[in-house]
Image (cartoon, rainbow, N blue to C red; front, side, top):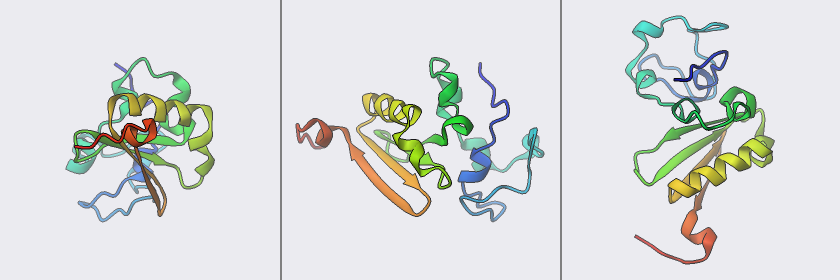
Length: 134
């Protein structure tokens, strides 16, 4: 099983309602060794599952802190959210970003992309031109 190692990017991207931490700001509990309150972290942090950690076949350069992208589940089971570091918007067009998009669209119909205030959605069926709908 993989470990986060030096990656703490999720501590930056995601809102933590239990503590009032807004998205795209560093959590006050984040240290250079990870979460200072990992054992008692809020439920929203416990619920987060990092795609890179879950899939050992993803190469090291797709680790979120290295590529500037972290992927999270969405409420809709046929979609996921790809979060691009607002300080690195070009990450989506780099090799690892393109690999994320390709891999995710093989398994999910919709891919929501978030980069700061910018949002977009890619639909696999529309991209393939077959216009299938649910």
